[in-house]
Length: 112
Image 1 (cartoon, rainbow, N blue to C red):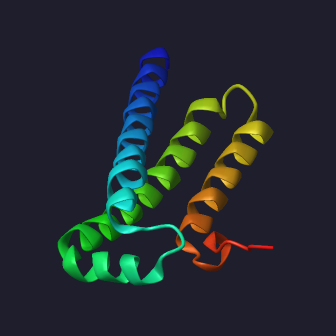
Image 2 (cartoon, helix red, strand yellow):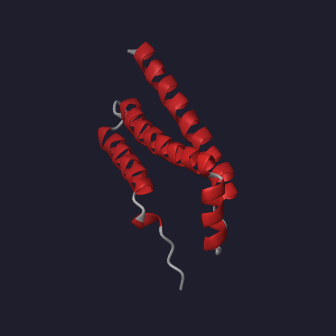
Image 3 (cartoon, rainbow, N blue to C red):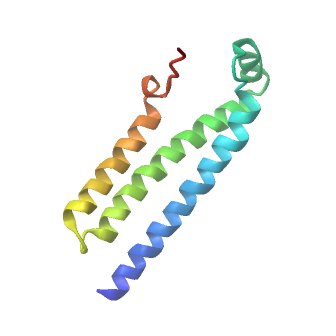
């Protein structure tokens, strides 16, 4: 039982590390090279001229979503023995967070 707990904790930690690395790469590197705030023409130009980076960025975003969902599931596995209700809530909100990263409507900005 104790060995299984440590195995689950290690896998959860590795998935969380993958989430952090993928997120940092996606948000700090790819978006800064492609997205120009307030300049749609420059952003479109960057998308055309750096097509490979844009495609890699999309793949990294999808990988980020997968990592987020997997981390939520493994956190449930890790904490269900401590408190089942809290583990279910942690997993549910983690999955919801992953899904909202895919939904383009939830990512739009509203400028007033």
